[in-house]
Image 1 (tube, rainbow, N blue to C red):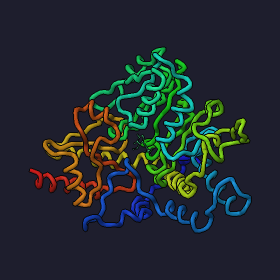
Image 2: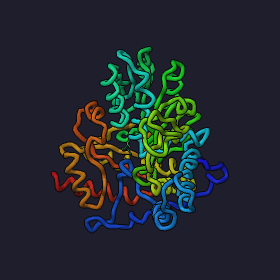
Image 3: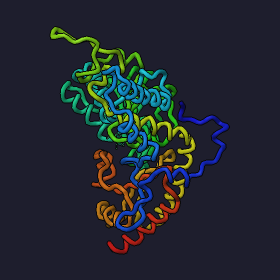
Image 4: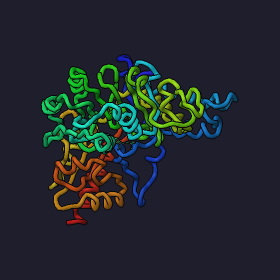
Length: 417
Ligand code: PLP
């Protein structure tokens, strides 16, 4: 399975209204108004194919994985391992054993922090991140810095929300032992040039982790050609269930890394004198996983791949191009994040209106947007604001919903004026 469709199929037009029908929740009303869900960067909605896969798991296959020889356990194991295979194909991994199944990106970055980086850091060393990182790609490294005496370095961004690549490269000095970069910013939508950043890191022997949480749901991916060392994704943002995700890492790195936490499933032998561990990736998957969730994640990957990530990216670009000028036409509205390479995430504020008030009143109009710091405090500090509103679009949104959103902003403005 691959996220990119063959050229012959890319020409076949998609009936986006039919695709939208796959999402039962989009038919509901909120406060008596049709739901306009513009919070997919927070968590995406789930198509019936995913909901049915989770339901079917509990109805037909429920058992623990890899522990029993009975039929149900074999089926559960096959579904769980199927998610690994599906994710390997979706990300373009060289081998399915390069995929560690995790509870999400946060678990993945912490795994890399404690298993890979902690043994490598010493006082005076540094970890490089960018000014647009999510807390999941800041706080784990900060915790390690506290433990080791290393420090964090931050590559700056422009007002437009673009990374200043030459400053990132200049910051790759010998004390930098690791770098973390978000592929697509959850606040600004900026798509970072990770291939170029990975090349520069590699040239200097600096391992690079890419936070792909907001890229995997929206862009075709091929981790091998990106050239990074670690790539993290979270299932619930890509039409899958919450509590699922994956870490991709080069096989030689995973083989050399010690387990992060211990328990059942991840061992070869245990005695009170000592324990030997299973091979990667199982040595990182202690305990009973979210098996039903991974059955759903495999269905999500199949669903997205069936549409084709290139078509999803193109459709979302259309929606972004439709929404942006209409929002900019609203008096006093400012958009944060105007990079030309941008995913369909629009953070904004309206002069004199608090982000939370706006989001609360929009909710009463049936429009779900997120307001707050979006787990990116440093980015809010960069722009000198406490919070923004964020409308994040997905392929199941429509132009009519964007019109309803802009109209609702107009009504809310009048109320707040
Ligand atoms: N990184 C980015 C860019 C995100 O947008 C998010 C979620 O909002 C995360 C990391 C964390 O994902 P999770 O909470 O699913 O681990």
